[in-house]
Structures are given as structure tokens and as C-alpha cells.
Image (cartoon, rainbow, N blue to C red; front, side, top):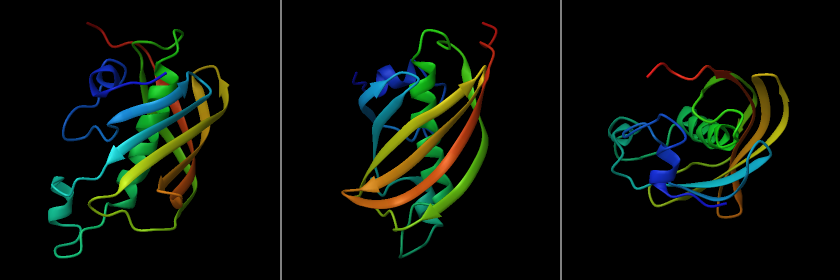
Amino acid sequence: MTMDRAAIEAVIPHRHPFILVDEVQDMEPLVRVTAFRQVRGDEDFFRGHFPGNPVMPGVLILEALAQAGAICVLSHETFRGCIAYFAGIEKARFRRKVVPGDRLRLEVVMNRMRGRIGFGEAKAYVGDELAAAATISFAIGDRPEA
């Protein structure tokens, strides 16, 4: 299952400038997802992080992973139309800088779901190099009122 930006925006509520997933290459809803973010360099956070030495903030790499995980969960018919909220981050490790021009590969494998609470292993790569990894948890909220 692949998704472009329009299909992603139909699943998660994030919008510019905070949507951090550009495409989904492969996905099995509620099981796993492989998505991408092209780090362009014109993102506003680079103006201050760091002038003359642009580095994508680690918290935004984790947010990109969380958004990929949300796409994986919210694409399943059970949770379609709901919102996923970050519930926790454990064992976060950063192994490599992510800089303008990098193509960030976001991989999330869902470990388990307990009702509306889920847990996943998340890894971000640039090429074959691990950039970041964490165990993430999330809570599925109700469908927003129209």
C-alpha cells in the first residue's frame, strides 16, 4: 500500500508546516509502515537550529516517526477518522545528524494494541545509516465532532 501527500492528509490531521511525512512506500495497517520525509532545508526550524550548521531537531525526527505510526494505525478501518496522540517515548537514541538534502526513511513496527493504546518500535534511517530509534506509545482518541 502506497500513499502520496494527499492520501496521507486524508488519514492524519497534520498540515503544513507540521506534517513531517511526504509519502508512504509500504504499509500493512496496524502492523508496519515504511514512509519518507525529504529534508529540504527550507523548513523554518533550520533558521534557528543551527544558523550556519542546519540540523533537524531530534524531537522532530521522533514526531515524524510518530506521524508514520499514526498513519499505520489510522489507516485501519477500526480507527479511520480518529486521532492518534503521542503517549510516550522510551529508549530514544540518536545516532546520526539529519541535515538538508537527506531523505529520511521512517520505519515503524507495531508491537501491540491494547484497546485504544498502542506500542511500536520506530527507526529513522538516512540511506542504510540508523539516525534515530525509539519505542513509542500512543492513544487513539475519538473521532472529532464535525
